[in-house]
Length: 508
Ligand code: FAD
Ligand code: DLZ
Ligand code: SF4
Image (cartoon, rainbow, N blue to C red; front, side, top):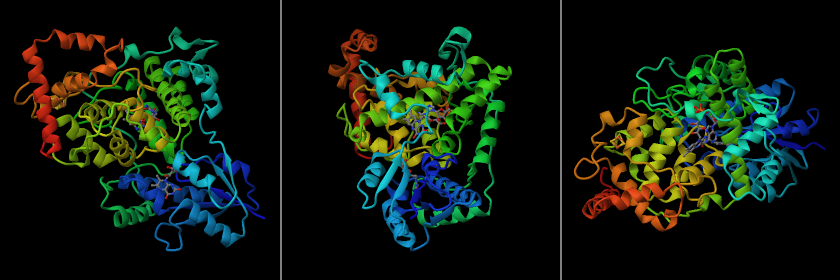
């Protein structure tokens, strides 16, 4: 008897564990575009198009390799509404008596497979460097789970940028050389662009018809949709942007959306690229003298460090993680996140770019949209849902720890040792947004004062009990306590006025 081999939309890897476990001569691959997956949040239309187009091309490549692939298209009425529904339909159609799957990246689907009325053999997802057991044993007995030590283990494990037991260049981390403010001129014009072929056009038409109301621009669409294209995009990045990746990793420019970033997370997370091959390409550029160590180390750290680490946290912390709200914040997400009007140039730019590209880089996500939501006291569940919906690279295993943990401190400090909050001066230092803003970043109070400046103190004061003994925050509270009484009252009253405007749905 044959078995079904489930391949999910973000499992488009030729060496997927479920495919390795199966027998091509008799087992049957099941892939499906289903309403449940396309609708658990209102995904950005570009994200749905990317997933569907890449799924269709991956199915074709499996067929070329001789697999029997049963593909359920979204517009086919016979396609079931859920992954489990589709498995049951195909089992009935083929007489298969079980399923082989690779573990999904989301508790919701893991549980759906666990309780499915057909036996499912779940294989580990070994497209990552650290298995669940590896991460658990690293975390075991540690008081705090800081990324840096985990990262060093991953360097040792992979041998990336290692000289024997020592880090290349004698330093594990070159961040000291990175994070320069925005440059006047950017010499790179962004990621490789792939004009849609007929197959992609078909998907774009489908998505326009069925998901055209979701937030985000579907066209123009230029993502890679095959592994070969994703490899080209990687090579393009390594050659043209990697050398300056480190220097300007944290910079933001109104007229340049991509700076020297890779824009490969959508491809890594779909499985079109693997983490090791990406890091090896970067390490090779360093060995060839084409990219400096600060850039290459910084880039590799994001992938074998942060990416693996947040996945470890997601699975370690369990299914209740996305519901955490350690700071008890409850405000509704302001309409400006969905493109509603705002006078804040930084937020407007980050949201606009999110709308057009389904992309914003790390510092925009963390220090603009994330920072503002945290300062304004927004309900972390709503922030989580927004990030999961609007970015082409968003899957819960990677999005939730970054949002609930790193950005919103809603996990109470599992990931971050202090909340990532800042006043407007950080944004002004790292970007050119403030020059074109209605607000004045240097004004701390009164008409026209940057809202980040007043909300920053409001946040610290409303959560003072929680943070007052945090050694990394003592300086901030000392600064506050040195301000004169009248000024402190004005700051808090101005912040309250901003919050009242948000609550009334007025433009901020
Ligand atoms: P680059 O800056 O060029 O970095 C290279 C690669 O490193 C990325 O492709 C990515 O795979 C990896 N990486 C870097 N930082 C992280 C990180 N913190 N966690 C995991 N991987 C990382 N990344 C996602 O892939 N999906 C998400 O849903 C997501 N949500 C985020 C939400 C918030 C609030 C924040 C602060 C960060 C989030 N990130 C997420 C991490 C990061 O912003 C993106 O990985 C990055 O912007 C992707 O663009 P890039 O390929 O140009 O990255
Ligand atoms: C994101 C996504 C979307 C939009 N659609 C589908 C789909 O129709 N079929 C499918 O198999 N997968 C899809 N995905 C990816 C899944 O949501 C993803 O596998 C889970 O969230 C686990 O990471
Ligand atoms: Fe953002 Fe404030 Fe600068 Fe305006 S002044 S762009 S709101 S940081």
